[in-house]
Each structure stands twice: as structure tokens, then as C-alpha cells.
Image (tube, rainbow, N blue to C red):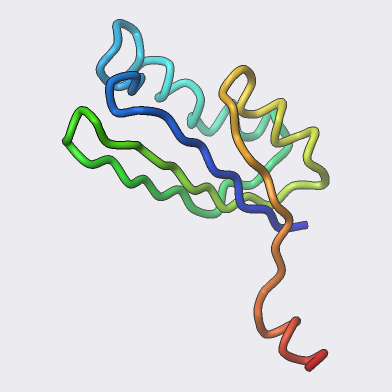
Length: 94
């Protein structure tokens, strides 16, 4: 099944600017971690304005057997997960 996971945090709380944050991100998105979670990470996109008052958003396209595997992958990182289908499949039902 195909999913979109969305993560949001204030720019002031971005892990990239915190001690150990870069290492945490590298480990989270490592091939070993992705494989151990049983998912396929098909795409990852970030919107990270430099304004400290801004909101950072991450969008992740994931192939997974279920939402539980995605939750396992992200661990304590809060994400909103929604199943999606290719529009070509939806268009066939119109």
C-alpha cells in the first residue's frame, strides 16, 4: 500500500539545529533503518523556510504493508499518515 506521511515542527525546534540532530536524521533515514522497519521510502520532500518563526514540513512517500510499520519507522517523531492511490486508479472509477 502507498502512504503519505507528513511531519511538522516550528523552525525553532528543527532537529538539524539541535545537538545530535544531524546524526539522528542520518540514522533515521539510513538504508538499514528503512529496511528494518519493513518499508520502502519512495520520496522525501522538505519545506524549511529560514525564518525562525516559520513552520517546517516534511512529506514522505512510503510503500508499506500497514500504518504500524510507518509508526515503527518514525519512532517518537510525530507524523500524520494517510493512504493514497495513484490518480490513474481513481480516474478509472469516474
